[in-house]
Length: 350
Image (cartoon, rainbow, N blue to C red; front, top):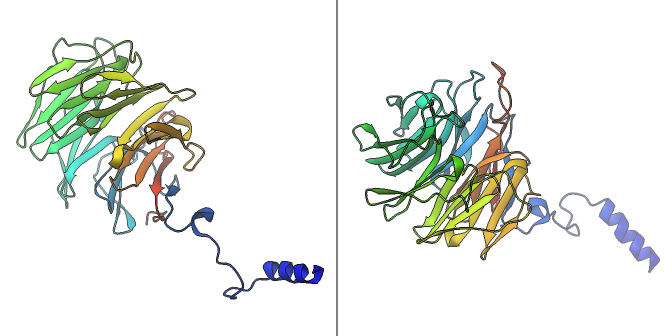
């Protein structure tokens, strides 16, 4: 019997490729084929700026945008399409903070110094600048119904804040929120299929638009710190996050979700079946499955995360990097894109 075990051990150690007695190595880190997992897709060797936002018009086309945040390098835009990554050239050096659209030929990018860029599937076109403050968020309900928000964090009463702009397909106009100025930077805007809009920002600000009426739903009991991102699965299933706050709107009222030991949240995204992904500093990755959040931060990518996007088919993309480091003119900033889903995707940009 001992001789048999010796022979088996020898065979295992000297298994030639293709030998019929040798087991095939398990793909995806030992997981069965097709099992969803986290993947570190792009890192600082592939992108020379922090990747601050993700969006895609389809499951096989995903954009990542960002930039060098004052270092003077070109604005960052990369796209995964047809199984490969490509660099896009929108021009300029401003960092893009958010991206959204309605189709592959209707994409909006907004960012520093009031920059608004539109991509029609072939060409990047610059729209008139919306002042000098940073535009932090954009949401396109249709080609003739686009919303942009912005402001100057901690800028005080003398800085441009409470910024809300609307595009009707012809021109941009600035809207004044009731009761403003709140002197709050507005960070993100999201719209539900029924036409409702939600805006979040500094000091736990929450604005909700029903029809043409804006209502201030801010509550100190819910959040006093900054709410960085809002996104919904439906009009009665909307999520907002910022720092340690995870807020949920059920169609009638907001409530705070109790989570322990979690902080530094920056981004949130809804997916099919009510799955919600929240991300933040320290590679924080929370996924809401069967009504409860599961901490998956121990999985790659290991970096500060700023945004998430769910393709609605079970795949989640996350991005981030260094967006808080000091300005270092001419130098790139580390950036990253990760993915949760079945299989793997390309891990380099030509």
